[in-house]
Image 1 (cartoon, helix red, strand yellow):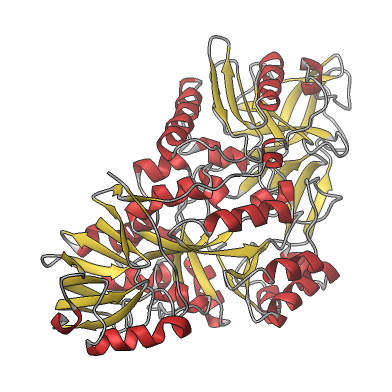
Image 2: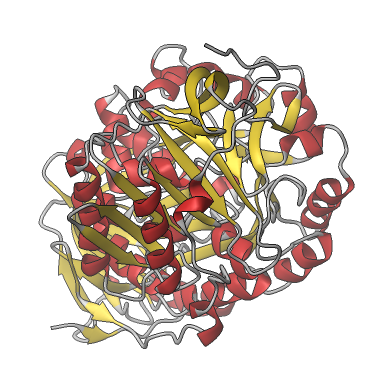
Length: 612
C-alpha cells in the first residue's frame, strides 16, 4: 500500500537551526538509518558501522552512534549492514526520450536509486517553446526528485533555414526561464557549436545571459577532440559536454577545465571507450560524470537508469566508490549544488539509497528522497498529488492534409537508368551516421528502390502547422526484409513527422495514423499495425510507466519481425533528423551535411548521373 508523499526540500538556511538542535540531541530525528556501510563519496571510503540521523528533508548527523538523536517518534530503518550511498544523479537527461511524463519518470527511476537529475527539456521546448519547459518544471516540482531544469539553448538546434521547429527560443527567453527559480540550473546543451566558435550573436548572448545569472552552460561539441576549435568553445564558459565517444574526447575536455560526461543511453553506448581515459591513461576522475542522455522506457524497465550505468562502469574496471562518485558528488559539484545533494554529509538533503550484496552489483533495495522512504524492493512506497498537463500539450500535430503514396516519390534528375545519390547510413549503438554514395535505379523519372540492397526511404513532414515543408531521402542499414513503414513524431530535435519505409502505400498509412492520434509511433506491415500513442507534445504518454514501456517494446518487436534487428532501433531512428550530429541527416528542409566546415544543406543526387 502506498502512502501520500508530503515533503519540503527546505533550504539549508531555513532549516539549519533544527539540524543543529537535532545533531546535539535536543531535537529528535524524524528518521534514523542505522547500521550501514557508508559509501563516503567525499573521502572515497567505505565506513562500516555508521548511522544517519535525518531531520525533515536534510541530514542532521552522521556517525557511529546516533542514539542521542532518537526517541519513540523517530522512524528507524535498520539497514542490517547494507551499503548506504547518496541518491544517484543523472547529469544529462532528456526526460521526453523516455516517452514518460515527469511524474511517471519519477515513479520509474526512484526505485532504481535515482533521486535527482539535471534535465534538458529541449524536446518539448522545440514543440511548445517556453510553455512546454514551464509545464515540465512545474510537474517536476510536484515529485520527490531533486529535479533541476535547463533552459534550452538551441530552439531550433541550428538555424530556421536548416529545419522548422514549433517555437523559437533566444537570449530573452533564456533569461526569462533562468529567472523562474534556483531549480532552473543553467543552459542546456549548446548544439550549435559552430555558432559559438564563430561568434553567432544569438548563441553568444544566450551564454552571456546564463553566466550573468550565475548559472551553468552545457555543451555539445562533435568536432574531433584535437580540433583547434575546442579551446575556443571552452573559452565561452561552456563547462560540461556529453558528446564524448573516445578516451581522447574525455582527456581533452578535462584538460581544458570542462566536465566530461560519459554516456550510456539506450542506443548510444559510449562508456566502455570513454572510461579508458581513467582506466588506461590514469586521468583524474573528479571531472568525469556518468549520464544517460536518452533512455527509453523499455530500457528503464529492462535494464535500469543511472544504476545500470554505474554498474556498467564498474564492469569496465572502475573502482565501485569511484563509479559512485561519477554519478553523485562529481555531478553535484559540476552544477554547484554539492551543499544540497551528492553526498551523505550533515546538512545535505536526505537522499539516500540502501544497496544489498556487493557494492559493484548496485542492487538498490530502498530509496529515501528528501528524508522519506519512497521506494523499497523495486516498488514505490509513496504517491503524490497528480499534475494536470495543459490541454494545449495534447494538440501539437498539425499536418493539415492526408498523406498519399505520391508524397513518397523521389524525383530523379534523369528519366531512366542509374544515378548516384547520397544515402544516410545508420550505425548501430552510435549517434553519428555515415554519408554513403549509392547507385540507385531510375524509372519514369522516379527512383525505384525495389530489390535494392538494404536501402529504403525516409521522409520528413513539417508538423507544427507553419509552412507545410517536406523532404525525402535515402536510408541505409535499417534491414527491413518485408514491406514495412514506421512513422514517428519523436524526431530530434524539431520533432517533425518522420516516416521510414520501403513501401509508399504503407508509408502514407503510417504517417496518417501518427497524425490522427496526435503524435506517437506507428509501425505498419501488410498484415500488422502497431500503435504507440504519444499525445503529450507528440513526445510523451500520460499512461503509467509499465504501460508505456510495454508499448515501446511492442514497436521494437514489430520492427524485429520486419527484419530490423538493430539494438534500440526506434531511438536510433529518432535521431536521423538531428542536424547537429555528423555526418548527414534529413530535416524538413532537405539533406543536411555536418562536417568540420559547418552545417549545410546538400543535394540528394550528384551533379552528374550515370546512365546505363
